[in-house]
Image 1 (cartoon, rainbow, N blue to C red):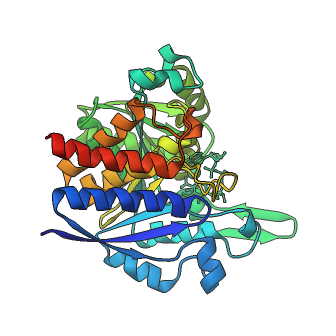
Image 2 (cartoon, protein in one colour; image 1 turned 45 degrees about the vertical axis):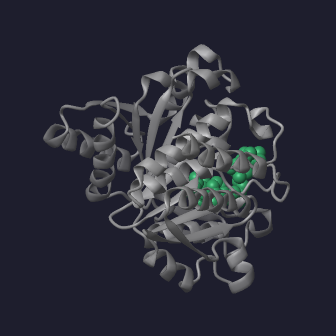
Amino acid sequence: MPNFNIVVLPGDGIGPEVAAAGVSALKAIGEVYGHTFNFEEKLIGGIAIDERNDPYPADTDAACLAADAVLLGAVGGPKWDLQPKRPEQGLLAVRKSMGLFANLRPMDVPASQAFRSPLKEEIVSGADMLIVRELTGGLYFGKQTRTDDRAVDECVYTVEEIERVARVAFEAARKRRNKVTSVDKANVIETSRLWRETVIKLHKAEYSDVELEHALVDSMAMHLVTRPKSFDVIVTENMFGDILSDLASVLPGSIGLLGSASLGSGKGLYEPIHGSAPDIAGKDLANPIGTLKSVAMMLRFSLNLSAEADALDAAIEAVIKAGQLTRDLGGTLAGSEVTKAIVAQIHAAKVAA
Ligand code: NAD
Ligand code: IPM
Ligand code: MN
C-alpha cells in the first residue's frame, strides 16, 4: 500500500483552519483509494516566533526537506507586524530552502459560476489562466539596508533564474492553449529588461511553437479585469506575480478559491494564495477551497496520483455547483461544513463509480 509523508505547516490566523481542511481531504482520498498519508505538523510563522523565537526553526526545515510534499496554511498577523522577527520570513525561508522557484497559481471561472464574480459575467465567463510567478528571486530576496531615514531593497535577477521559470511557463502552455504572456516593466526597470531579453531568446531557441507576447505590468493589471479571457499562461517576476494573482482572484469571486503549487528541482509545497485573514480567523468562516485545490495539485504533481487529484477536483466542483459555499461567495456554510461536503462527495463518487 503506498505510503506518503506529508509535512503540514498550519501557521497563523486561518492557516490552521484551512490546513485542517487539507488534511481531511487527504485522509478521505487515502480511505477511498487505499493510500496511507502520514502527517507531521511543524511550526512556521508567528506561532513559531512565539514558541521558538524563530519563524522557521531548523526542525521544520529538516522535516520539509525530507517530506514527500508540504502543505502550508498561511502565516502572519497584526500581532507580529513591525517586529524585527516576522512570520513572513518563515515563508520566504521555506521557499528558498526547498528551492521552489516556480509558483503556479491557476484561476478559472466556469460559465456556471460567472454570476458570483463582482465583474460582468460576459467578461469573466470561461476565463482560464495560469499565473507562473517566480518565487525565489527579485525584491523579496535582495539585500535590504536601513538607516533612520533611508531604506534600500535590492532587486536582482540572473539569466539562469529567468530562464528556468520561463521554461516552466512554456512547458505549461504547451499542455494548455499554447500562449504565454510575459509581464515586466521593461520600460523602466533593468531587471525587467533582462527578463524580457531572456524570455525572447529562450522562446526563439526552444519554444517558437508557443505564442509569446509581452505586457507591461501596469496595463496588464487593467487587461486582467477588462479582457481576462485573452490570457492563457502568464509568467512574471516575484512581486508582480504576487500582486497580479490577488487581482486575478477577484474574477471568480473570492481569493479563498485560489490554490497554488510551488515547485523547483525537488519536492513541492502547496498553499492557498491568500493570507492569514486575521479579520475572520477563529470563526470557521474561511473558505477551504483554495487549500483543497492546492491539495489536488499536490496529488498530481508531487505524489503522482492523478486519478485521485481528478476525484478531489471533481468533488470541489460538485460542491461549488451545489452552492454549498462560505460567506465570501454568498453562501451560508461554515468552512468546516464546506470541507465535510467535499469529503462526503469524495466518498459518494467512489461508491457511484
Ligand atoms: P489576506 O489574504 O489574509 O486577506 C485579504 C482579505 O481576503 C480579507 O478580507 C480576508 O478575510 C479575505 N480572505 C482571505 N482568505 C480567505 C478565505 N480563505 N476565505 C474567505 N475570505 C478570505 O491578506 P491580508 O489581509 O493582506 O494579509 C493578512 C496577513 O496574511 C498578513 O500578515 C500577510 O503578511 C499574511 N499573508 C500571508 C500569506 C501566506 O501565508 N501565504 C499570503 C498573503 C498574506
Ligand atoms: C503570498 C504572500 C507572501 C508573498 C507574503 C506573506 C510573504 O503574499 O504567498 O502571496 O508575498 O509571497
Ligand atoms: Mn500574496
